[in-house]
Image 1 (cartoon, helix red, strand yellow):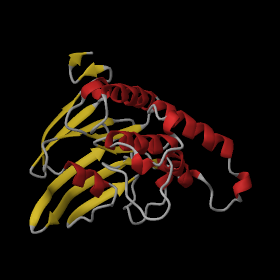
Image 2 (spheres, rainbow, N blue to C red; image 1 turned 90 degrees about the vertical axis):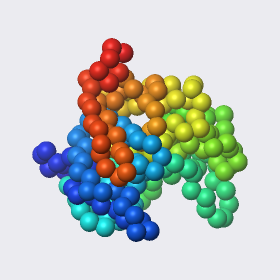
Image 3 (cartoon, helix red, strand yellow; image 1 turned 120 degrees about the vertical axis):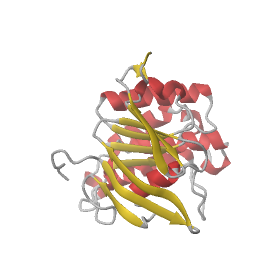
Length: 242
C-alpha cells in the first residue's frame, strides 16, 4: 500500500456513537498526523476507549466518518500496519496459548498469503518476538500460559504482541493499567524508539507518567467531546522542560 500525500494515519469527522440511547461520542473531529504521539486523556466514562475503537472501525459510528490511511475501516486492507493494544487479553476457548504464542501472533499479518511459508522470514519473526519479550521483561515467562499471568503481566503480553508486528501505527488503550513502574519505564523507552523512527502512536491513559516527554499532543475528552487540546515539542513535558 502506498501512502497518498498528506493523508493522515487516522481521521474522524463528526464522529457520533450512541449506546443505550446515550451519546458516548458526540460529533468528534480528529486528525492524527504521521509521526505524532497523541495522548487521549479524560475521566472514566468520557469516551476514550470508544474513540480509539471507533477510529479503527471496532465500534460502528451512528453518524460521521472515520478513515485509516485514507480508507474507511471496511475497505482498509493494510492491517499489518496497525498495532492495537486493547485493555485486556481476550479470553478464548481451546488450549490456552503461551506467552510466546500470543506475542508471535502479532507477526501473522506481516506474512504474505500468496507465498509459501518457506519464503517467509521466520528468523526475522523469531528475532522480533524475542525483542518484544525483552522489552516488556517477559522472556522468562515465554513458555507460561498467558491466561495464568496477573492482569499487569497480561497487559505487557499485549504490548509485546503489538511491538512484535513492527507496525507503522500503534493504538494503545490504557497500556500501563496495572503495570509496575519498571515496566512503564521500559514501555516509555520502547515508545521513544518508535517515535524516533517516525512511527505514529495513539495512547489512551489516565496519566502520562514516564511517557510524558514523548507526547507531541494531548486531547482531553469530557462527555464524549474534545474539551481541551494542547501540543508540545518532543522531549519536553507538555511545555515544561523534561
